[in-house]
Length: 288
Image (cartoon, rainbow, N blue to C red; front, top):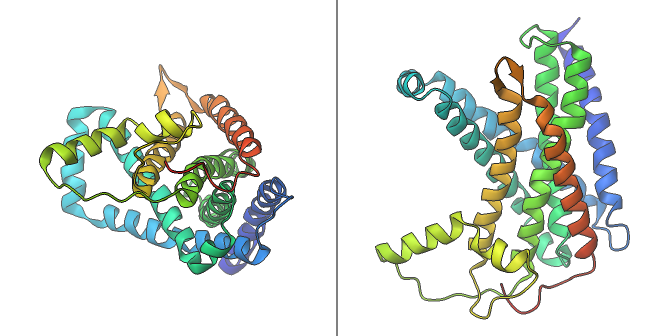
């Protein structure tokens, strides 16, 4: 079969589940829907964001010195090196998708008027990313580069991976919505070692999300929006990384892939419940 026809066929197969998931999430905000033009633009930006991600992965594979260094590290650390690489790539994916959404520019300031709008835009971008990623995986399967039946690959990539992308980015988008619509508190920056260390530890323990966002209460002192966005990226990275770990690792010869089911179900329930709670919330109290 002509390679162009193969990619066209793979594109159609990848687009169908992406469109279905896009409609499902878009309908959740049926009372105050976002402009379809912006949803499609967000999806398109997600498609484009695949290029820098795979470009970085390709550069990493081509860097012989880096590969040798990583091989030596991996040889002495067993699974630790694989976990680190998985988390690094997950962080890279989630970061690239978020920066892609930000390319919507001034339109966000006009249309972004609900916390859940962050979910809609992030999910749309994530589905665009997953759509392009699936085309690559489907095509590689045709060329024999992936050792799996096409039916299994299509089902897993369409129901598992694509939903995973939507959930992980959607949860990030929920916290991003809080940050986007909250009052910005800017204090004088103290770049002392103790202050930087305190800021880092607060971010890593998800201080704002745990103590304020999830408890639905504002902070009297306030926080930088950027701090909450960084915490949101950590959450999305950990969830995305956990998904990839379940898919990649085995214990006593048995695959852990079945563990993605409770992960996705739990993420979907949390995001859907939070979406309903915050559906008409335009701004979160005074500050976060």
